[in-house]
Length: 482
Image (cartoon, rainbow, N blue to C red; front, side):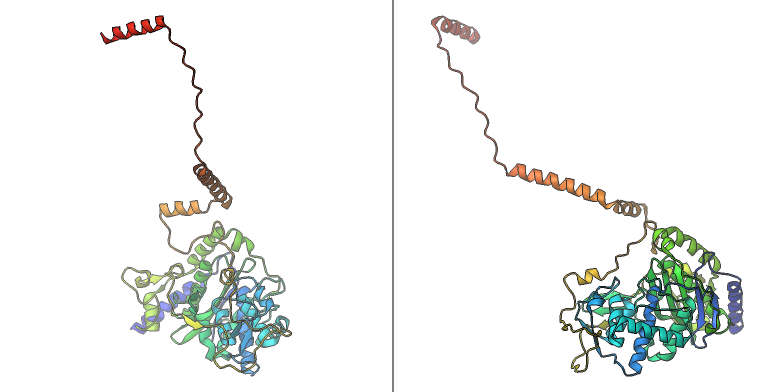
């Protein structure tokens, strides 16, 4: 009886999903079965798009391919070049000459999304960024990625650097199929480098049931991109979302698409068979960086409308009592303990805590092999990885849009007032601080000056008192004494 109920529940959920579509202003998206390569759902999946840091999945693919071919090992030290240090954040901020093993570099690439280490890996594997880009494009062609063309290993903006949701799904699947022993590389929640803890940007890890990897990406021209994989009941799916207006929006849509994929029964053919649509990638500056708050609100509302909450009983049956699905457990009164859960609830769950994976700078102990580096680079390896402000400069300079919406719960009136006050223009704050400093300086100067001596009034010479005046004075004094 329970299995019949479960199948009926899944069918109802699938039929509801089947009648829904992505948001009206929908951006490319796709869900595939990782084992078979079958397309379970797609919309505009072959539309050209800027991949941003999703590019680093191909960087990993080419690097692991070189390891398998014996051209390099995971323990090989890579030397950071001057070119690598000039890359824009996000980055590790290591000095030129710093050594880091390929294994540690790949972990930092996936978690920190370090643009400088993407260049370091490219130069270590192929000798130059340009040669590595050639290997990236050769691998893309071999995998059937028809819309993709790569010019760098990190995805920093370049109008020639494009891909598609379909191509990213193919690449994600290829990483699991060709390098299953490296699957944990995409599922690292946090790293520990010395005393520094580096958290992963993937909002699905630790929140969505069974989410076990891949990569996020963002630039203003690309929007918020995501490749995510999740496994439930022995079935792994890969979903791709491109061009969402916020990190919360891409998490919501990815959760909704995976929900759809896990309850669907059929497909739309092999992912490699989807026809290319052509065209040029759009520029997402307006929705991703200029008017993010309004765009996110509209996008998220439409995602909620298209999403049908899956009954908790279905996930309980699918994963069993030991499953990690938030649909199947949780304290009384929590969203996880309710009968259903929507994508918006997953996107706003508390940030999970991960046991950080340790990484280090420098070669492995006892290394006597070669050091991989850019062709022509003769820099001497350095022992100090960071310059004076290296760690601060490594952080992303991108600030939230003025109308951006927080992923956290709504705050009270006092908190809102304080937040509004803190957003006053910096010029006003500087003016007030300067005025305050001038007053303090004047007060100190006044206190330090010696007190001025009071001006002495000239003393008038006393007039000689005559006999008559003296007599009159004596007479007046006598009257007063009476």
